[in-house]
Image (cartoon, rainbow, N blue to C red; front, side, top):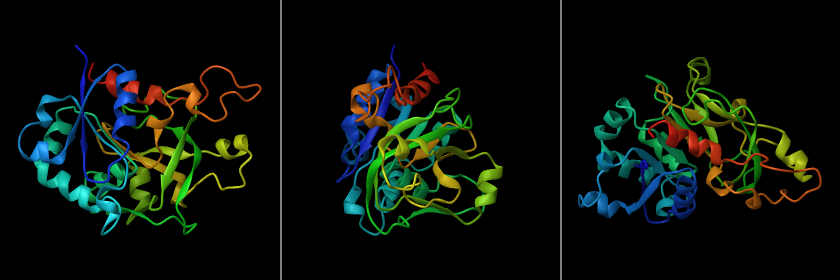
Length: 253
């Protein structure tokens, strides 16, 4: 039996279809459900094995990117989500979903340490490809040794923490921006698209089961999605992000 992934959506969410396809390619079944269905009890978190919070512009990023979506998660799931994570449920939040998990308080999950996602230091919306260097601090990245390539699309992606040293020392940094993507594409852009200290692209919680990241790995799960995949000298899977989703599915399969 395939693991089931719940993908909750709010008004303005727009990456739920891409996220569902990524998980289906990784061997899971998916349920994309509006928050109204959760509120009505038509869909329940407990009937699924993985929670995936997608990206987009929930509520038009009113009052800050992901803020209202984060409040929705708190209202609809409350302590149920913490209980599910403690019981072993993997959770991933991507871009707006990452912002929602941070604003919910699930990430980085350190007592006394506050975090947020601030405006990019460039002062503009960044939409381009980046390289991600994984570490082994999460079930989603465990065993991944090669850099991943995927696009970013955000205006508020700079990870800010009241105690960055504590986040680092606790091993919560799961992904960092690498320097290979821009060079490969011939781009005159910095490798770090938003100015996050320590080139932080993604963080995990204490269990390693909850991962939040700003880039969009769901948009590079097939080689042909990479604009460089036909470049001379590039063969096979180069930075394909499907293994990241496969790790999450394998954790409960």
